[in-house]
Image (cartoon, rainbow, N blue to C red; front, side):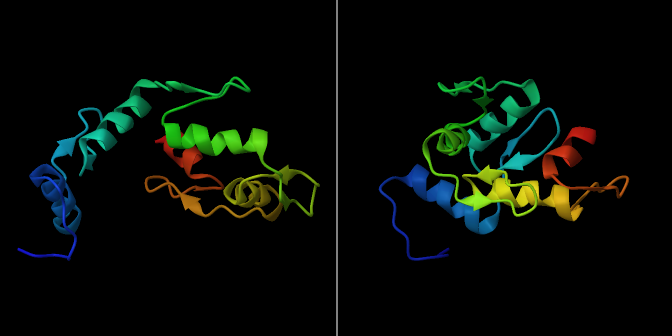
Length: 130
């Protein structure tokens, strides 16, 4: 069956890619039942349950679940803070952090718990109560 025109060097790479088209998720988390297309994503997800954060920032005490999150975090130490809050003057390197911060001033709570329907400003706060 053909889904797209992409070609791959190995059969395993082709099979892995085909799963994205049919949404086959053969890797299941034993903690919560969530399923994943890629084994690596399951491994990263399990670290969330265990609290493991193997990627340590060399500039501060923060540690992270993935290299991606560490690299994104490192930008706060090296880049210019281009997003400035008009309400309190605080500055941010990342637009997503600026937008999250801005909710403090606007009172917006776009993230809702599916069980109690309570609204939260951040998705991680919803996850922490579930």
